[in-house]
Length: 206
Image (cartoon, rainbow, N blue to C red; front, side, top):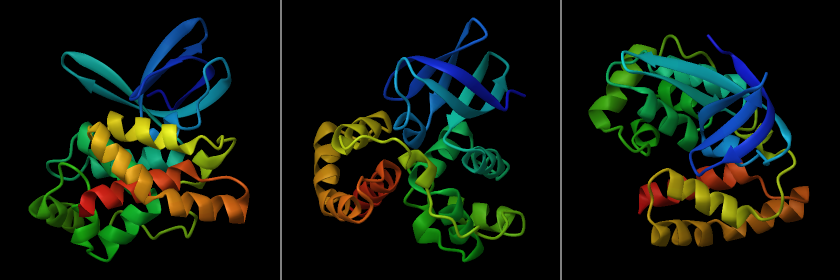
């Protein structure tokens, strides 16, 4: 298993990045929180999980080891594949997922595209005793490191990468603008990870 890749970021798209490692270009499908902190030409470390199928080997990338471990854990639930698992850690931080599963908060789980009520019930039933307790950390905070103030473009691009339309992304960015201003006033910079998750919740309620 490839636990992480470290090297210079060669290219990024709305869903992936290529990182040069040992002379090889590693193509990694990334969560929006991971992509938000990557800069082309700069060194980065991405925690990874490899999914091997009969006809493919896909490397998924995450902002930290906790996000990666949660991605792998939720796939052990019936009906949850890599695509849905990646969407789950994009919409909810690891601690938010733990809390939703332990407290049987089906509403929080069904905010994830591809997870219906029955699917959420299966996830709770199969993972409640295995997911562990929330760590109490601030979900998504690692992704805020070195994030520039241009949060609008990052959140907008990430939403498009998750399949939302341009209009939906525009509306969601506008809906979290007040939160971004509050974060900037309090911490000196917006937390793109937290803003993205807030935007996704806004879209899920719409």
